Length: 282
Image (tube, rainbow, N blue to C red; front, side):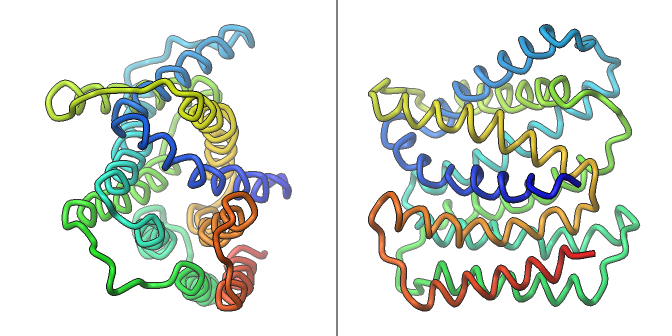
């Protein structure tokens, strides 16, 4: 594994939480995501053609990548964006999704035949504890039922997508695989728009800047790194770094949005870092 990749991924992926709210303030969540992954799919198509990759693949490889995109770009991101758009506190949504490494560890043994050691479980539990301290559990907040359901669906989807991606038997180039995954995301959100949503996008300067950030830094950058990490490492170890994302997002919100960062947050950050180190070290 290229050692710097996890740190780049954590930084880029965490920054997405800073620009999610500006997007859904200027559009409905599904139109924003359909627009985003239309550009992403086109971008990976052009890159694949430029690098002379074979883009016509057999049905099996196409369906594998397409379905992975439906899970990750469709159900996971759609669930998170939708829940926040109807009033789900961002911190609570992030904390629920942060359960992913625990779920992945529990399933990677029987499904992927990966050996999950006691050391990894200790690291996972420390990571979750630290993330919970950073985010806090605001029991008094008014959590919408549909928002809670959407976030749980997002949690199941990202866990299933990680395991599915690890099980893929194809050896498609990352740009080609990402192109078909992007197409899966676009297709999912277009179906939601046609049958369930009221699409609108207000192309304000804020929307364009936030969307550019999520397309180029998150979808082209962070997601490609994530696919590389999953392909070249165990699923249980790869997803453990997700515990660093809530703490890093909280730090970015303090740095760029002037949000508060308490001593409890810093303690949670430290515990999370220790947990991730324990879970991922050789």
